[in-house]
Image (cartoon, rainbow, N blue to C red):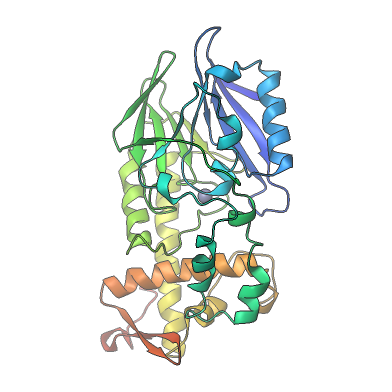
Length: 337
Ligand SMILES: [Zn+2]
């Protein structure tokens, strides 16, 4: 059910069946008769998402020929239905970094996406099994539409609102938040979430996803915000407090990475991830669903990149595998400090 948050701002609840994310919060700034509306994020290219989105837009009698769409980032649970929302006069907005990164479900580029996990320790069998199964691929649209690319600092005018685009790389290389300074609304996408922590993984086009993410958290931390609007789950809260929790969470994960590596030099990222602490209801690493293993290893890689760039770890290639080591001066240090 569409829920009125205040004035012309509505929250639409889009289910994500089978996903640990549970739901997507789409937001709608509803235009008055003859004016344009803005939809923020859409859902996977799945029937269940499309039906929910159509139903909620219908219940609000949105003029679909005057509805623009803003995508906080390229992930399929946000961008998957953009093509379905495109009508001749409608603009689909996304950052200029993430726009070219959207890949259609049948695109051969997905092969390379899975292959890059092999040198990090996934077996060929696991990759064969998970191929085509990850929701990032099977929830993507079959066809992409034309998009309007946005830069950091751009402003979107919707009714009486002037929405500022804030580039917040980390979760994806071109993740973008929208900020309404008058009402003090922040559409935080997957940059700041509650109850769950945004997945930060290695991206081929960025060298330091985790460093980017930590900088992007600091970039929004002190914004005056009355209404924080995250893209998943029902919880919300105080921006500054949550940013501090997320910064502390990654400090702990960095310490955990070093701790695990100190136990056995020369592990793959897959092996390191298998010994790290994750908040998931599985008894052990073997029980992790394969898609969750991809996320966990991706996140471990972002932490390893962060540490490598700061001179604390290095890797060597052996028999087609990347093995990770602590630098000598890291040994013996109390990593929990
Ligand atoms: Zn996402």
